[in-house]
Amino acid sequence: MDDFRNIIRKVVGTQAKKFAKVELKACIEEFEEKLKKIHMDKEQELTVRNADLHRQKIGNIEGFPMAGNDGESVESDVIEGRLI
Image (cartoon, rainbow, N blue to C red):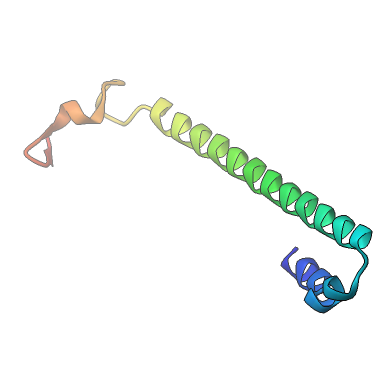
């Protein structure tokens, strides 16, 4: 997606904006704002999806009983950094 941004910047760069009409400048700025918003929304969706996957992995790990502790927490079997 960064390649697309670079192309847009080159095509509608500062020189193009400098010599463009006011209406065109407004359209370009509006397009750039919408594009930034879309990218931010996509990044946020990706972050939420990754967080959900992480929660699922943690939930699966916590739900998996360790051998020899009968489902109790591992911390209860630790004394001075050693497992008993």
